[in-house]
Length: 621
Image (tube, rainbow, N blue to C red; front, side):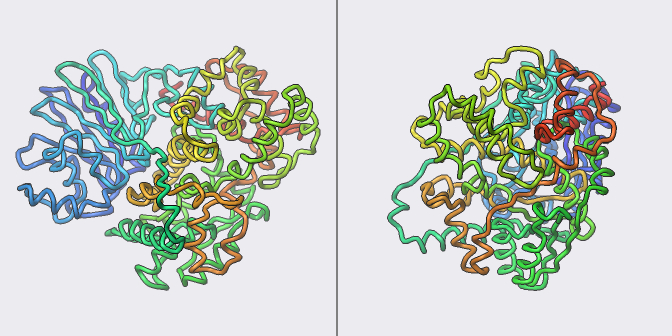
């Protein structure tokens, strides 16, 4: 796990050093540079040593010194690929570096290389003979990659703050992207907060040809449901066996490490399944597990995590989080993240990573299971929402929303008033907009007031509408699965986990995003994911073989924090510095409504705090 940066064109060694220094937290174990004055190429790398600690320095070159790579991530099938490449005649200098597989893989397969990789990665390959830079990002975008293109100038980096450290970077904010941040809670790829910076979409590659000064991008993979109904005729136990095997295989691939490794444990379905499989492979009493709990009981899952730990005899570590600690951590955290993000579970995720890093350098996680197996609350709302949408006349929707707004505002985790108000807001629109409006920090009319302009919903939710229209043959549950997998997972969850982990120089590995496991989920009929109101149906069947039934059946809580309550006290002074396009009076009104307990605007206010911290960054000014 590392940080990469580079540019071609205007600039000098000072720029690449500044860009690379901004990534020091991603790679505290070493750094490397390459400069090519002839082509005006500058490459930089920060290393977090995980595999082949002694021989994995970067940039790494082929035998003839014509092809170099800088790489962030892990390639889990590198042993198999190394064998295949050796049979093709390639000779490796390292003992077991996954990075060197990329160099020879590019020589052998060119732009087809990313499609052959099972891993999480963002890399840049410099092909000096062809005068080309080739960049690629893993299928789900676990590892970040941003770029900027101007006349005679191209730059890229693992993080926006690093990209903006180049003196030639244009830090003008993009107002439409800021509006989308309040609509989704994240920046949907390829959007970023900057007008002149682009996020390379997960499952994509990019080629910059220096001779023509052209950038070409292509999608080599995209998640899409393709239910195989023949699986419905198989015995359920056979499918449980297959899923169990795939989870265990994915864990085994991610246990490869030359440094200490542990497991994030919430006590929920996903992390318990990961710990179970890892224990089967390694044995009991050998795995470190890590949990963050809360003093507020409605948010706390630490007792369940402790119980699962006892079942598998892990070496369990637990830490509690409260308001006083949050008051100290939140400002510094938002300053360090480098870009605004609407998911406030960034805070406990950051503290969990910080806690785990005291003992391990790698942690296994259950990220991706909720999206692939229909684990989120909105899946439970779809049937009732469809009935409401078809049965209640549109003229009554506003009246019903008005009545719901009279309910007392609760700060409990996923309280009834919160879920009801949010559900009714989404039902103001057609089914194609339910998911983004249920998820987003603000509804469209609130965003229009905040920015002081009329915003067509087809522009605000362009990405979600395109996905909806591109899948005409899918039902409502399937479309919801694709929405969460394509957007929330990639640009929300994985962004949050990457930033929280790398701020602590910790590598996280998402078990459920293994290529083989994902491909199985794409083929699995919906009834094995969501059945009779039960999400994660088949995954729960796997875990039911290994833990008591009550642990499998308990309701999902999620990794939330008591944000609504905390934001009535944090920060003491509300930050209201000007941000391009935003009406400060409307922003102040959101704060007053929240602090006077008239509304719960916690998600939007968290976004606002992130934007205020982002505005203070050196590049943005």
